[in-house]
Amino acid sequence: MAAGSDPLAGSEWRPVEIAGTPTPADVEVYLQFRAEGAVAGLGGCNRFTGGYSLEGATLAFSPLAATMMACPEPEMLVERRLFTTLAQVRGFARDRIDLVLSDAEGAPLVVLVQRDAD
Image (cartoon, rainbow, N blue to C red; front, side, top):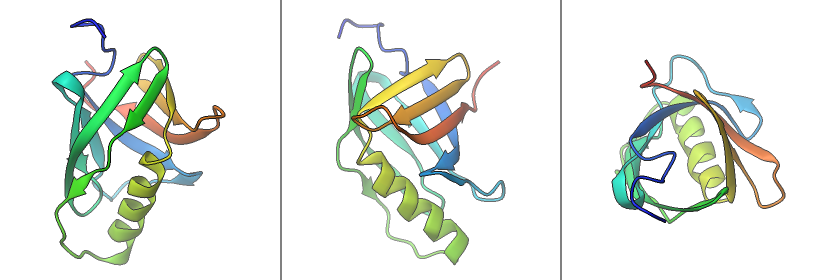
C-alpha cells in the first residue's frame, strides 16, 4: 500500500456493537489505527497492541498482545468478545465516522463510531 493511502491510519474508534451485542456505554473500549499497520487500544479492561494489514477493502488483524489485569465482569466480557471477534475480521466498510468490520463473507462483526472526528 502506498504511503498515505491507508484510510484508517491515524483514526480512533469506539465499538458500539460487537458480535451483535451492544457495547455498554460505561465500558471504556477503543481501537486506534496507527501508522505503518499498527493498532492499539483499550479492550474494556486491558490495553492491547498488535498489527493490521489492509489491501483494498480487505482488513485483517495480527494476534494482539494485551496486559493481563482482571476487571469486573462487564468489562471482561466486552474485552473477550472484542478480542475473539477481531481475530475473525477480514473486511471493512467506512462511511465518514462509521466503520463496520466484517468477516470473510461480509457479515458485520463490529460496528464502530469514530472518537476523534471533528
